Image 1: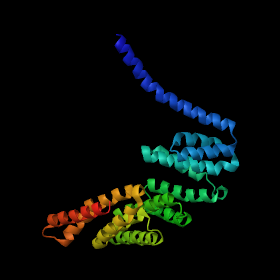
Image 2: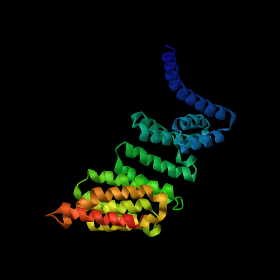
Image 3: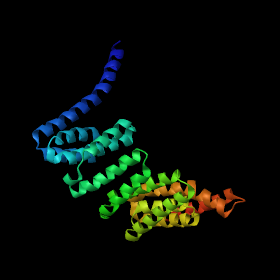
Image 4: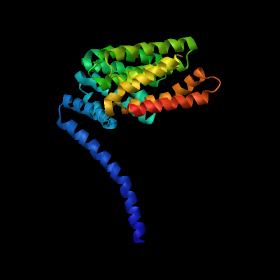
Length: 283
């Protein structure tokens, strides 16, 4: 009997402790907001957003939004937090809330950096609403405004742009799809000319060449990309994984069917051996 009571108590603790933590976290946000000035509250909201604490970021930003001069910047934080929550939950409510917040943002009231974030947020909203082509237009508008020195930010945006175009191409007629993939190839070539360390560009150059029908370019670009990004250590780990998956699951089977229509399996086995040898040599 005592054992059963202990188990029950433990069960309730498992439920209550996370809840109490959330309540305490929210109370701290509200307490900080009440003791700080509006700009401090907005700064805190941005910090919470950057720390992936989206619920708390929304709460703090809503408090900051009551100050007219900060309303647009605060609504932008709210929109971005809802968009990130949508990535986690796929809840239509989050996309609706993000859209409503974005409609209240006035570009003239934003800093230069926030104006870029507004362009990106509008693109994300369009993408999540199924408007991938329009989203790509927004992302492309933002790219020249993102300094190449801010590498992580720029590569994330570049990946969003290429992903949006690739998604549009998946439902487009073949000539249109090839044109879209050619746009991706040209952009990635330009990125690599300006920065050989653009790991996202190394992946998308090979992926878009393959999707556009140039399987030899895809194979060569993948090999060159692997060798190039091997210099960047842990920073390139994700890109190496994605490039490896692209080569083994898509490029090699496609190229094997072209190179050896009569015996594609044997050709694919040879290519896999070549690819594995390259990875070993450049790990």
